[in-house]
Image (tube, rainbow, N blue to C red; front, side, top):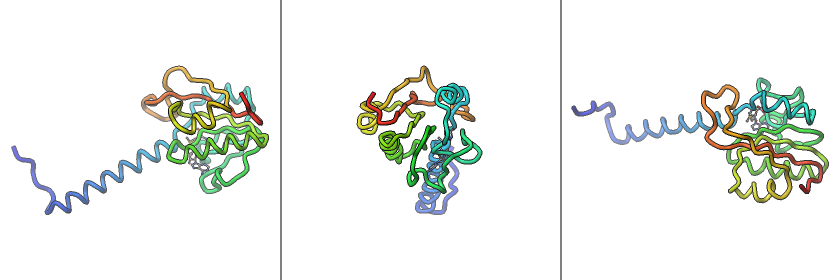
Length: 164
Ligand SMILES: C[S@@+](CC[C@H](N)C(=O)[O-])C[C@H]1O[C@@H](n2cnc3c(N)ncnc32)[C@H](O)[C@@H]1O
């Protein structure tokens, strides 16, 4: 049976397709930015490090009482003290890792939850030579997510003037 024709022209059909595609992209991007740390991962690390500042958060998902948000823009702030970082996993990820490395060189401790992307340039430039890496067993199920992540994760620790 032929499919019913719901568009008046091919151009209209194309426009509808682009709108749908854009909608899906926005959903994927926002999901990726908001993957919240499971409490059972955060709590033992907090016991160990006693975090003072959550570098990437919104009021409803902040892990510390002091936190930076997109409005303040953590990438434009000083990172000092003992910081927790589960950054947005978008195209800016490299900038977050570079800043974590630089901040540790200035005396901060930055503990990160990261996708274990050992093939990326940021992993080779900053993580491998300068950080302590704790690979997580299995795949994380981020808070509020229905399924486990499709990628492995690691806790990456930049200590003051770190030279692991
Ligand atoms: C992966 S979530 C982590 C949330 C929470 N801190 C945690 O550990 O579960 C990343 C958070 O960073 C926020 N974010 C995005 N860009 C930011 C920026 N430039 N400065 C500060 N926070 C930002 C996002 O809104 C999001 O809530």
